[in-house]
Image (tube, rainbow, N blue to C red):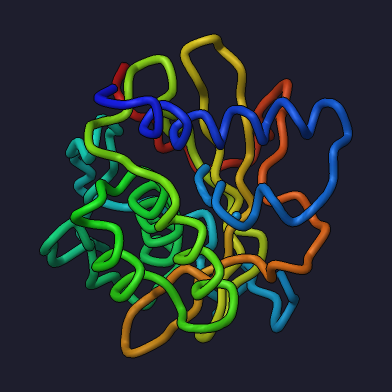
Length: 223
């Protein structure tokens, strides 16, 4: 890490996980600790004619972003510019990839990247504005160290519609602790964008887990 502020930013997620083990509540973790973040508007399923929520992304390859390996597939992203990744397929795998990629990029983007990531990857609103205010107070000038970088394990789509998708993202850390990040993406401007949690919400966007569900879509980053 290049500075004390940089280390502080990358510890946000792991501190949120530890807080969840202690039963801590409050909007703080959702305000800045988006890493590794649901109102039900429609149910999806794998029934006949419905979207295939367990469909896996195809032709997956891994590319690093700020020290974190992120999946790229046929379902997206199609374009990367100035730190922002856009162009996700309007499908369950596309929504899942967007949830994963937007969450990580928003969390670890450097000082010269985060404003573009926010503008292109996050749904506008009060939550986005408040996140930006908090982000200005931090500084990230280098990649995430191995100690703090999350490693993707997989995901589970909790709900899906053409307009909105809830995706639980499972990650692992260097100390072998695991966490689930409850994220939401919305179809906005012909692309999937991340919907940040309401700043007043007391729901935990990140929780520690001891074991992975048996029905997740495995999407494991290389070690």
